[in-house]
Image 1: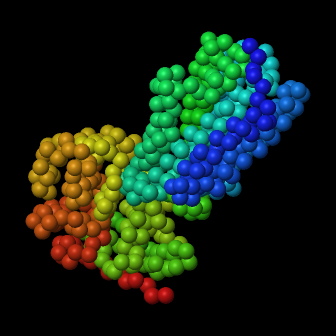
Image 2: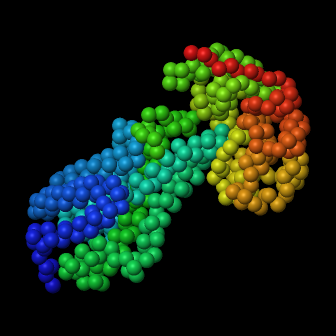
Image 3: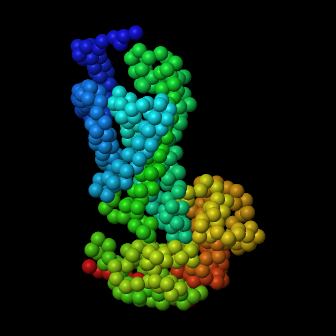
Length: 264
Length: 208
């Protein structure tokens, strides 16, 4: 079955729906109408831009272009992640980039080569969307997790110092904060998996079905998408914490000054 | 033995403590007094390597406090802060979990000794099974003191030990602490507590 065309005129008609949240947010004087409108405009422009360059990337299907795209997008993801957790980009870029790249590469290779058995791992039609979806999920879950970790240590500094001062190693003293970061970051994904298919149909599944795939195949892909997202995000967070603490804490275990840009 | 040798603490270009020297013998009980902002907490935190002097040095049992031996130094210290949220849900965890730290491996929790401490400090046995949020700040502080003593630490750092307790409990705590065979370093504003210490060190706020 062919996908029904969505013309620019139809898209514009569809975007009129944004008037509903605009009116609601204005009525309740939330003060976030402008932010919302800017976000919608950004989303539209960014997606058109992605659509534009993806056309070329798919057409070229070049190993080096795809790798270059991955390296660049990992950098964008790392910078966005660091900024959103109010840490210093200068201090955190290397550990975060490394953590994101390592977990993403491992999971992408495992899935593309090991699970679906692609001959050409870097085939852009699979490589780009899979890496893209992984990056998006790593970003969102790691923002929550790393924020919980660093804001937890700042908020509960006395508890952290109590553990350190009473002989806990740096790793032992950070354990309760890592635990909290994992819970806060991955509880939503665990809850989402529990109701998947019952009260929630994910975008990837819908996209594949609309794109013409059979529901059976789409479901199998969706299961794998959920699993790889979950694993890559958790791996990235733990690697990121493991490497970042070397840069953000001094050798006595205290959080270094100047690492946090704004107060959490 | 604790030695502060000419230590100066500066934060954000503001001097908090200037050229402080003091020697505390093993087993000596010291009350650290002074107005707020005089640097009492800074001095106490420096013993655990949580603040660092910009000049001078600190020696604990002859070891200079530095990165190389900070773990060894921290293994000898127990710190009981004034008000703190502990990462445990139940009181029993606050007592038992410290025994699981690498630094305390080989040490065993003696529940008979624990019960004696409970009695001496006016705590009911049933509190051991309570949830952390069910106990008061004063009870929490005494529990942390008990946890520290059960670990058989040589140096005990107390932060305002009598601030959150009633007069009767305070007298029990004071008699209890007086008999402890440890080196005690207590930040306090309480003259009754200072009286039972061997010495009182007064810190004055530096005027800039």
